[in-house]
Image (tube, rainbow, N blue to C red; front, side, top):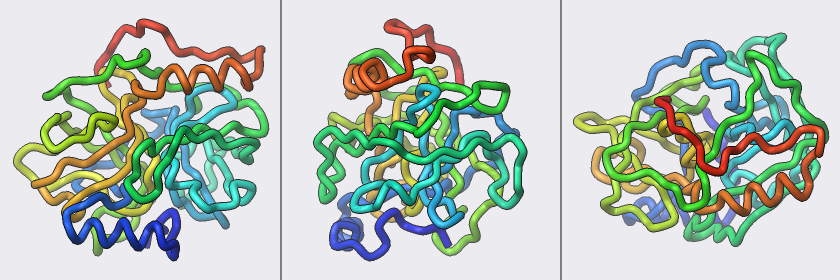
Amino acid sequence: MTQSCRPSSPALASVLLAMLLGGPALASEIVGGQPARPHAWPFMVSLQRRGGHFCGATLISPNFVLSAAHCLNGLNFRLVRVVLGAHNLGRRELTRQTFRVRRVFENGFDPLSLQNDIVVLQLNGAATLNANVQVAQLPAQDQGVGDGVQCLAMGWGQLGTDQPLPRVLQQLNVTVVTALCRPANVCTLVPRRRAGICFGDSGGPLVCNGLVHGIDSFVRGGCASGLFPDSFASVATFADWINSIIRRYGDSAHPSLHPRNPVGRTP
């Protein structure tokens, strides 16, 4: 069963209660998706503890990853391993690169409301970029996505509330919706069927037009309810802050690859 990011915390208990009342609850498993092609998304990261996956993340520079703040909230980051180049978590893959976390950067995260649910993690080294490990492209500041845009969510979480964990990375086609969505979030639904993200390994990316526009954050009304949209932290809202961290603390030999005015492409 997927580990929640803080299985016994008061904050998580409050959020789970909020879910029962129609409020936010931590995300995300992929429900109703399909296996991804091996290494189709080489920026996808597995955050692990004691050898087990607990959250997703995105490689945004050779020595930085982006995830959900609640994944690291109250956790000793020195116990976290950042695994790049993975696909099947049940195998010892030669494509993997593993790092420790050197620094954690937050930006006003509220663990009860899950506002500003975004975190930048500096690695203790620089990734070797190759066919299996690549840096994701991010949007420019405030250049978000509008209603009806087609996106892709992905993760290694459970296939449903009472379903087993998948071994391989799952992906799911979703559609951006603005109704019932907070201003600092990107929200999605899957039209005409019950599918979406759920509890467990939050922090994974939402890819829209070839750019990482969201970080898996929370659901309302239960997993894949078909009624409430799934919520992601909006990367475009924090783009300048993210890039300022990379510029200030990054390895000058590995500059940020993020374009100021990126050209979109389909996921």
